[in-house]
Length: 416
Picture 1 (cartoon, rainbow, N blue to C red):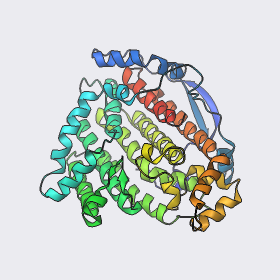
Picture 2: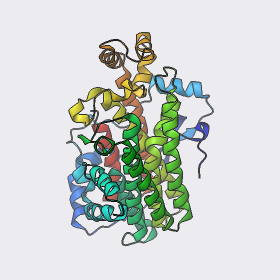
Picture 3: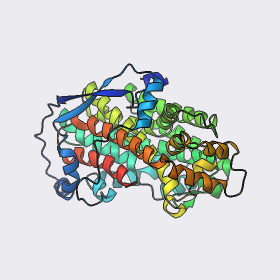
Picture 4: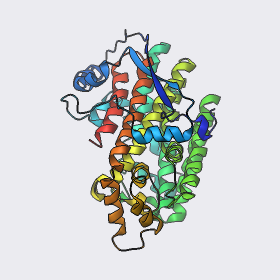
């Protein structure tokens, strides 16, 4: 288990020297399912963006730079390797991405309700509210995609019971964290629907989240794999650490980018990294591959969080399913704000006043946009996405690996 101190947690921007090396992966993957063939065919345009990286990976070598120097490098921007506009291509569809594991996801949806349990009708109703709120099931889909992408390496012909139970546990933990997040943020809407605490009250919402954490922990223990138990248990601890970090830095205009990334790891990337590594562990592949899958999930998770934070400024309340600028008004300063604060002193004054003047929130949002905060955050998201693509080079070429790559590109397309 990795230490959760900031200097040991590699967020990608601590790497500055590039080196080319041959991946050496086998490419004799063969799949007979028609969905695999259809996905590979439908994704040919996306594949153009990543094919030239297959067989060759860009490996960043550790730097001895100080944190201050590293933050300066991030502020200057890292030349992106992914360019969504460099070739003509259609948008990536989540439906197509998940087609490969559609049967797996259907089984998961059927099992989620029974796993939560029906001992308490109120808690069950609260769980049904958020399970049925139109979630993308991205995390369990990643479990299934990584499971199938790595299973060939171990000679597995089908997913194990442990793979499937891991996906269910991951979705339960994610759901529990959303319930608690909405309570802490006093959010009334989630995915365009009323939140659990809005419908049932704060007491029931907190108990529902606690119950789901406990239930998922019980199923986790029954997997009887100590490595995965430690991995997922750390995630639950990370959630609490992330909330504490966020609560202690509200309206803090001196928040550093590395602190924001650490908080984002705790709140978002930790679970995704555990999802992808846990899937590889249950496939039985060696530790080199499982660590690469962890790094893939971590970098994808960080990229997703940065993109979400950008969308909080660029999308409407209808698109977001919650009020626009909700993070900023609550004092949660994200990447676009951190970058904008470097150029606009007036923004600091507005934030530190906690938006006491009428119209100050809208003024702050416009300052973030006009000072280049959005563009700088986009570059940060692309850097993390770039690292995620590199982490996949150890896998055999297959439609499943392609879907994992396209998941990275799909995330970036949300801000194009």
